[in-house]
Amino acid sequence: MLGHLRKWLSIRPDRAVETDPAAAGQARGSGPSTLDSPLAQAKLELGMLLRLQGITNSAVLRAMLDLVPREDFVAPSMLDRAYENITLPIGRGQTISQPYVVALMTQLLEPRGDKRILEIGTGCGYQAAILGHLFGQVYSIERHKDLAEAAIRRLGRLGVDNVSVQQGDGFLGLSVAAPFDGIILSAAPREVPVSLVNQLAEGGRLVMPLELENGDQYLMRFTNSKAGLFEERFTEVRFVPMLQGIPDKNTVQATVIDDDSLKMDSPKVDSSL
View 1: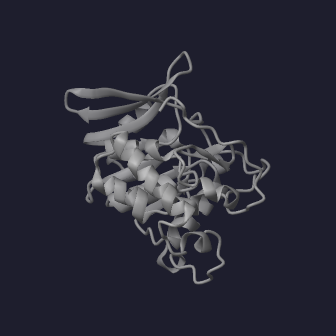
View 2: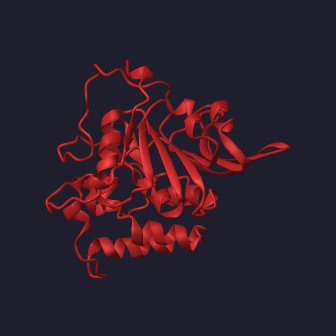
């Protein structure tokens, strides 16, 4: 049963290089970047916006703007929107978060190269790639096997070799690799998962969207200390709901982002940010 499957889908060195320039994602991210290109101009404008919105960590900005090409994580049909500050659909009812939210959540984890991070909700792998450039070891859990495998391929092509992706139930965390210096959620639960709090190291931070009873969602940071859990509330956000369990293997398989035939919903801006 997939519900009990704890199979690692780890990136391996022999999968890290894609020699075929026509490989999915490779051709889109390998071209020269000049200020004359629309994508480069959009990236420049995004950098200015992130700084204006309070993203001050230079390592986070470098990862977002120089090291990880967001265009490699969106469908070809949405390539021209890769650096807009909006969420974009990736299939399976999931989204790639808007750049500001990715940057803010990453900054709240306080990046350091020796830290170990757990991500819940791999999605297309974009957040995991950012984390991989900023932390020592990253573990990422995704409910959908096809999304997890597609993320692994992208991370491999980009040479991000310190991220391990596992199909599993995010509510359970990954106790075998705990404790973690940071845990980040890419989906919104309605209460703080106790199992994840228990997997934080002392001083560890849990950065997550939390859905309130009225349906509003806020970005939260919980810091684990000897005195208890210290809570901080930041901006209002909008994430997909965090769901328990692993989808049944007999459910209809949706095409993931590697296939440009994917039928996308209209992208929505997080207008509250």
